[in-house]
Image 1 (cartoon, rainbow, N blue to C red):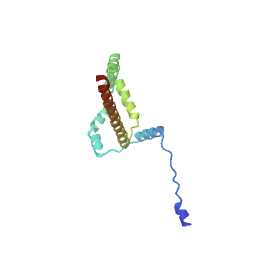
Image 2 (cartoon, rainbow, N blue to C red; image 1 turned 90 degrees about the vertical axis):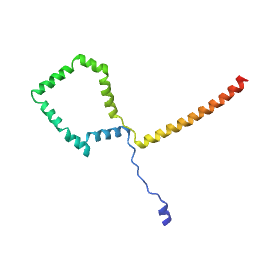
Image 3 (tube, helix red, strand yellow; image 1 turned 90 degrees about the horizontal axis):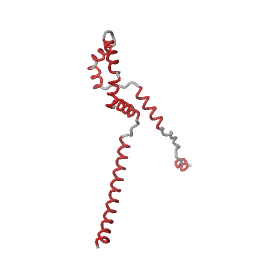
Image 4 (cartoon, one colour; image 1 turned 135 degrees about the horizontal axis):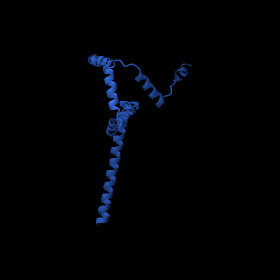
Length: 144
């Protein structure tokens, strides 16, 4: 009776793995949460506090009108054309797209890199052997 109890295996319930959409949703939810600041980030936040105060002051008259004037000036067609020619919109859109990418883990990156290197070495060896064989065949058949 004791043997039959020990020979039984416990059932382990496995949860289904996350889909790509679920992972992306989780990343977006984590990005929406306020981040905890480390000591260095807290220091720089303190260091740039005067600039934040200036931003607060900049939204008060008369600097508010200056900001609106600058916004109008840089929205002119000439500057929009210049931004288009320099590709600034493309760079901005590319950066936003890169933020949405779900990057692989470091372990998976190492595994995939190792697989590519091994494949390249094996394929290079096969090409080398084929080259030696064709070279020998060419020398014996064509030259003689």
